[in-house]
Image (cartoon, rainbow, N blue to C red):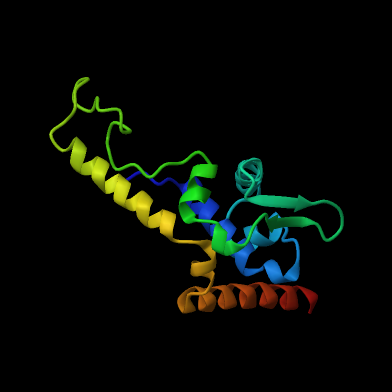
Length: 155
């Protein structure tokens, strides 16, 4: 399966945005610190997410990004597609030319697996993920780590 860093980071950043939305617009710098994703990479991802209508931006002091719709309306599959990723288990990218221009013996198996993965990710929303207990615990730990860093730098 080829889900690259781009797709994984996009989902992670969008989930972070969903989980921290109550504090208003979220800066990419904050997401970068919490999720340990390079700021320049996030800028590239959010340009694509914005073009796809998944996020909106607020300029000026206190600005940042907001989800363009409720987290329950944004599927993981949509986030992955927005950054031009696909979940494809085939070696040929679904083109049926995996074996010297012809379909390989297991092509249809891998196509079906890709469809199942896509169907699964189409059913999972950011809202569902944000409500999961283990994810809430991780987010709390990440916020605490950031708060500890702020406290340490002020001492």
